[in-house]
Figure 1 (cartoon, rainbow, N blue to C red):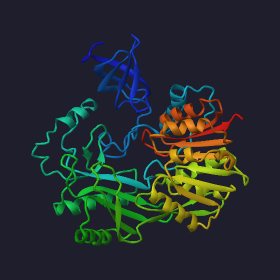
Figure 2: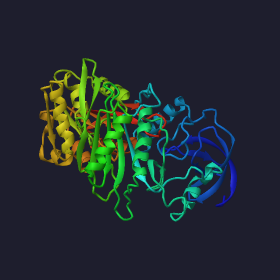
Figure 3: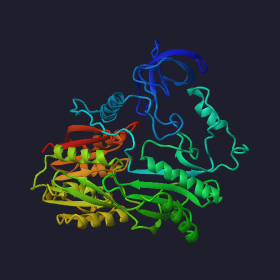
Figure 4: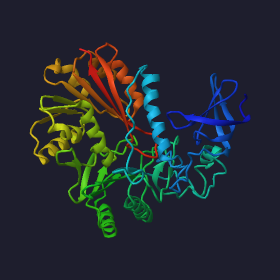
Length: 486
């Protein structure tokens, strides 16, 4: 096989990035983007490595029986969804396999007890938070894609000096593998209908006023991000505009027109970010209208619990699945009123508060100051008195507090996608907690971490429970329950 050669192959599975995998007669494995298991395709070999090939689709000779018609007109270009063309049953199978592969291939575990994945009742309009990026590096819709193989080539070919591009003004979602290029989304099925209508309004409002867009080339420009947060159970809506500076007169004009067009909005925030990094997080926030936060409600099986969510607060992005996730965690832990829980990476206290009425006490630790403020507020909001929260780096907290097992018998971990710091894993590997519940949206880093935690022979995996928090994407949440061997 040589680069540039065109071959026929059947796609038999997907890798962790959602790319199709085919096997050739000579033993080579070929990875092909934009394909699904069961597809019979013609592919052009783009790269030849020692043990595998990378191909691009010329055409699909026979489509997979799992293929369905995508719902969104932006599908195939936008990075928001990966699997709108794959039926939901097949999506769940793929995500279950991702979890199993991560723990067998990365963690080197065997004889695993993996529960059936918990699917989502809603596969569209399920997100309570969406981040949209302002950019002048916009995919031009008129550039038709001749076939699936040429997406990257055609995107790259549009010159920065192209006359069509000089006055581009976009607000949307990133295209995969491109740092600044976005799809100027006119619709999106991840969040509610009102969400993308707000996006369209915001784009036109600032476009008419010829406001500048922040660019990493010069680190100048006014507009950076738009974040929309919604509560599924109280119907609160927050519009958070992230800019490079605060322009009081303009932002008040924006607020007035926004509320005139969308009466359901309950608060408007202008977050200011002067940092060079393109991260949708403000250094401080000006509340322009409303109280600067939204309230979400979760039912823990005993009562409805209220959660205050501020602009920078972390909260699970799928509210309905969040209840399933937390309740399943409760079931796996089999907790009782004698248990004391240490909740690391507690965020705004969602898990801590959710389980508090089932246990003796909970202690939450989190690095972000705003999150801890929200956690303490949420505890008061729900009249819960058996919880304490502290702001601290998790690694520093564990290093400075020895013999935590004397005060807590259960640990809950819910870190970012990057997982745990190796030092944290090493510290935990030396402990003797009765149980550790590790929740992660990245099974790969989770398996890596659990391997280290179990390396000293003090813990074993009892169960794995995949939960689909993100339908139509490649992402899957997973709960891993560890039990002490002592």
